[in-house]
Amino acid sequence: MMEAQTARMQIPEPQDVTTGATPLLDVRGVSMRYHASGGAMLTALADVNLTVAAGEFVALVGPSGCGKSTLLALVAGLEEPAAGTIALHGDAGARRLGRAGYMPQRDLLLPWRRALDNATAGLEAQGVSRRVARQRAHAIFADFGLDGFERAYPSTLSGGMRQRVAFARTVLAGGDLLLLDEPFGALDALTRAGLQRWLLDVWERLKMSCLLVTHDVEEALLLADRIYVLSPRPGHVQLERRVPLARPRQPEMLAQPDILALKAELLAALSEGMEVNGTPMVADRRMEAAQ
Ligand SMILES: Nc1ncnc2c1ncn2[C@@H]1O[C@H](COP(=O)(O)OP(=O)(O)O)[C@@H](O)[C@H]1O
Ligand SMILES: [Mg+2]
Image 1 (cartoon, rainbow, N blue to C red):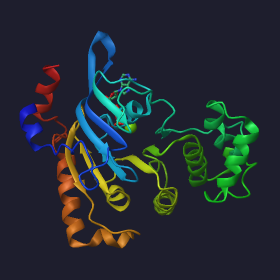
Image 2: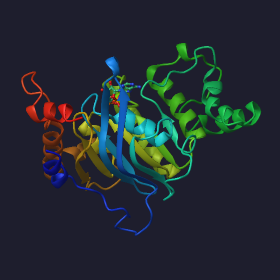
Image 3: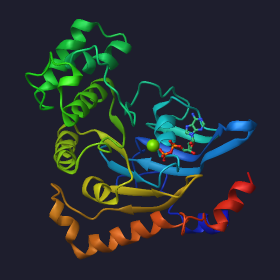
Image 4: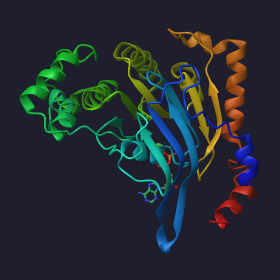
C-alpha cells in the first residue's frame, strides 16, 4: 500500500525549481508518533515531504485528525519528529522554537489582558521589555484594523477582531514564516471572507512566507500559491498542486474552468481513503495493523 501511495505522491524538489534557492522550510521524510491509551503508539504522520519557498503562501488541507496540527507544531519546534528532518533556511540542525510565528488552532487571548498587551505576549516571552513590545504592537495595530482598540479587553471584541489580535501577536513574535492553524475555522462566513481578504493583504505587504492549515479547499485555492493534500491518518502527502491564479485574487476567480477542475481534483484526493458509508476503507485498517 505504501508503494502505491509513494508512486502517486508528488514529492517536491528539494530546491525551489523556479529560483534554485534553498526553500525557507524543508520538511523531509517526517513521521510522528504519539503514545495512545493502553501503551499503544498512534502514528500521526508518515513520511511527509513538503517545502515552503521564501515569500510563498502554501496551504495544507486534509481531513480531521490527519495530523495537520501535529505538522505545524513540529515545524514550530514544539515537538520533535520520530523520523525525518525539518530545516529552516536549509539548516536541519538548528533550534526551531520561536523562529516562526505560530498561531495554534485555538489561540486563546488572555482575558485579563487588554488587546495591546495580548499582542505583546509573544514578544515579552522572547525577553523584549513590555515598553518596547507595546511600542511595536502599537505601530502595527492600525494595519490590523485594531486602531483605537488597544485598551479593550478580549471579551468586548468581535470574533474577527480577536483573531486579528492573535494574528498581530503571531506576526510580532514571528520571523519570516507564519504558521497558521485553521485561523478562520470558528468564524461565520462573512467574517471569514473579510479576514481572508485581509490576510492576503497583510501577507503581501509583509512579504512573509505562510503555511496555512485549513480543511476548506476553496479557502486554499483563494489564498495559496501551492496546496498540499494530506491523506487520513497517518497523514502523508497525497497530492501537491500549484494554483494558477494571478494576484490580487478575487473570489469570482474560483469559478474559472481550470480552477473548478483543480478543485475537483483536490476534493477527490481529499476524499481518498476517507470513510465510505461510515466504514473506514480496508487499506487504512491494514496500515494501522502494520504499525
Ligand atoms: N498530544 C497528543 N497525544 C496523543 N495523540 C495526539 C496528540 N496530539 C494529537 N494526537 C492525535 O494525533 C492525530 C492527529 O492529530 P492532529 O494533528 O490534531 O490532526 P488535525 O489537526 O489534522 O485534525 C489524531 O489522531 C490525534 O488524536
Ligand atoms: Mg488540527
